[in-house]
Image (cartoon, rainbow, N blue to C red):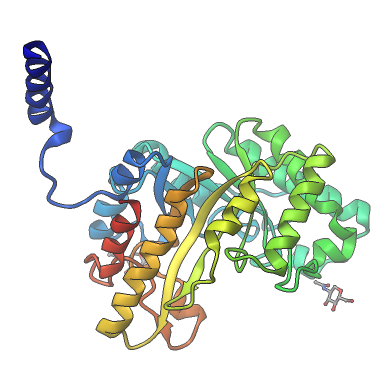
Length: 342
Ligand SMILES: *[C@@H]1O[C@H](CO)[C@@H](O)[C@H](O)[C@H]1NC(C)=O
Ligand SMILES: *[C@@H]1O[C@H](CO)[C@@H](O)[C@H](O)[C@H]1NC(C)=O
């Protein structure tokens, strides 16, 4: 007993003296996520905002963010503006930042119907041609960042909400054949990167999430490498779908990991104390679901401050979607995230 007490006392003394036990002035989201056995808490970021020093002070702190995602600079328009001519400058800036900050990097993305260069979006291709275009793009992009990326969004938003395939240039030219082509190319290019499908409106059980579950089953049966599903999670205050946890588990049962990849919770402006309080609850709900599902490996917000959120530019009259406000001050949603882990 005396021995046990002495040991305990020694442990407490060590803990009190250890820097990790110092009282924190600010809670750190990545530290908290890792304490709760998640791989990371992360954020999207974008090249034009990297000159903002106050923003950088938060972004570069890997106790706050253990992972970053380039919001735009690895997309097709940015990386292969003309056929076979690749430009990685802006993507490299983000990849180098992750390395310098010792943060994980998510690659975003290989194949998406949006933000394509004209030569892809308005081109006409035979099946053979489009598959060669997809293969060259994915293989070159993923190979360039080989060893630097934790996970790639290999395919992004390939289904409509009703569960049918989106009729984009890839589907119209090849049916769904571009999907295995993209995954195989990515695996060859970086065998250690986790390969994901990523989409919105798949967070709850519905026709679209069912379509992804069927796709994952088919791909696995055919030996196509898919490791994860990204729940984008662009939500509206007070309108989270029910049964996100059950739906996450339906995916993890198929042998893929889940990540919340683009979380934000927008509202119709102006913001009010009531909306901010509901937003806090919504952030807490999403985090607590990921916390409760072992196969949910991490959460990424789609930028952390309203100053640089994509929402006002895309949804007229809406905004205030992020956990930090335009002045880089934590909002109630920030504390909802902390509560969700606890
Ligand atoms: C950062 O650069 C952008 C353009 O890329 C510019 O609009 C903005 O004013 C700059 N911000 C600062 C703080 O220098
Ligand atoms: C794909 O085909 C559908 C049906 O013919 C058409 O409505 C759609 O515009 C096509 N999409 C592209 C990107 O060509």
